[in-house]
Image 1 (cartoon, rainbow, N blue to C red):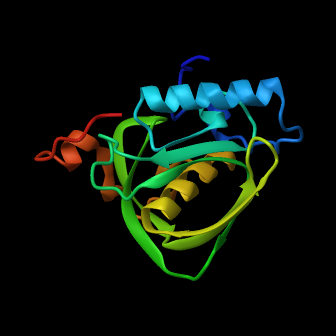
Image 2 (image 1 turned 90 degrees about the horizontal axis):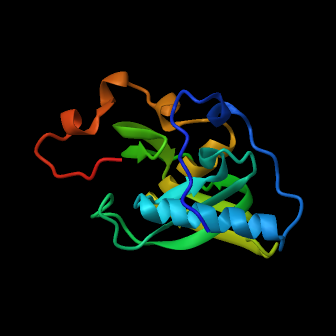
Length: 177
């Protein structure tokens, strides 16, 4: 359909809680998902939430195959997740570096649950229920935070671990957001 502009940190729409999707199998929902897919692919993103393109609905997409932004990341199956519910499987927290299409050129060390269960539905209203860990769990948490109006810098414990990618990783070739 179309590549959309991604809202950047500072835009007040990114801080609003999203509304649950009520109707499935609609032309509008299908168009939104296609726009999200096109936008995410054009930017080599690991995921994208509807609020990032200015749509205040509880829709996220994510998936990582071979991605220049995440060269060492485990693969994550492409998923359309609507009206998600996340449940930590235990209390183990792991810190990891994150970037975001809405916070371009920056990275931060973010604490996330290492293992979790996510539930929701796909674009047809079919139930999704998965238990995941590590990078997959991190991606899901990051994207679902957008639905609550939370950007990853809001979760950083020590702001010395937040900055411009080129400054944090001067010896690495990391593709900029």
